[in-house]
Image (cartoon, rainbow, N blue to C red):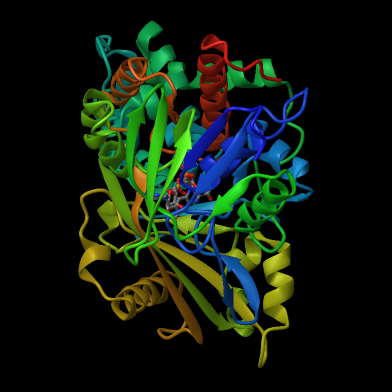
Length: 485
Ligand SMILES: Cc1cc2nc3c(=O)[nH]c(=O)nc-3n(C[C@H](O)[C@H](O)[C@H](O)COP(=O)(O)OP(=O)(O)OC[C@H]3O[C@@H](n4cnc5c(N)ncnc54)[C@H](O)[C@@H]3O)c2cc1C
């Protein structure tokens, strides 16, 4: 360990913690800190994870990365991984009894082109006729935050919320539109809606502004990695070890307490053995409930804010069917609005979406496979807690059978549960995050990053790690003990 540098302990070795370690261990003038990453599980990566399935490796957590912002693509490049575009991104929504292609011109489900919406058939005629009322209804005053569901239902009617917005939010947040914050989940719409009466016009202005500022889009919106996005943590860990960072798994952080301007981080191995690391700064990259309990002694007010963040438990069921069934798959997959009364909320046709999966699956024994991935679980829905793995797999397969006609029983199946899978950005989340950061100013040397704050996606998590690293380095520099690169 380099004693000339401040020692920063990072709690949590998911993408946020590993990215923070990456940014700390290399600056323009060399390493900025000596770093220890402590991960409770026996593997790194958190919600980025692969498993062996039918002879190939597939993602059972996150599977794609946003390429319209730079963080994830850049980080992959830095660790020597080449991103690949999806082979198809044309998804459908199962609505009113059949699959319907998602029309262009939606902003998180909010339509901007009524002709395309009508042609899609996702919304019924009465639902469609309700939409233009948006132009004559009195302005919706957005005093503070509002839920996406309340705003969209008021402006465009309940059917647009139920059949378009709900499945889109379900896909990203595993949340419910009546709770999720407009300010956090569709911030550009929140800003535009504060200035315009019509939601349709507000959404249209957001899409047009996006086109103007970014120009004609070059390249894909989402990218993946051959072999799975779950390879990224491994590549980061290899790079971190080469840079001299200490990276430990099976290291459950139990307590963080202050001692003479520094922090003692107490770690258990789960078998009664404890080690204490002394750090100049501690960066928490753990889910909010864990961060809350670890912050309790040092900063009870920040802990209270974090404890209030709700999480959705979700599950990913990977299913393999004989390759001959590929004829039933069109596009990249589909979303299912809760109003349709199914358990799956979305299905990705992995072997259609990713060329590397299709190549691997074709050669899977005995006659090749098609691979699908079904998502189940939503905030407040006990399905994943109540069902066994076998029941979850059967439920997913039954829904897929009912919706697209694949055989009732797949050839292969795998269930991955994600407890505290996705934080819920409920109404007021932005204020809660701002308050947490404000409270943390009382305990310089403690910072937070990760999915619980300003975005759940991989790119946003990496962005939050970058921001937390800047905060920590600035605080350390203010103590004037270290000049950093
Ligand atoms: C099923 C699913 C699919 C998703 N799909 C996508 C997608 O396709 N694209 C996308 O961009 N995003 C996706 N996301 C979101 C994204 O994957 C996550 O938000 C992101 O990976 C979270 O990273 P993180 O590092 O902040 O947290 P986590 O991944 O939760 O990592 C936190 C780490 O802290 C560790 N930890 C917990 N307690 C302790 C402790 N006491 N001591 C030490 N370590 C501890 C945990 O073991 C874990 O490894 C998906 C999420 C889920 C659940």
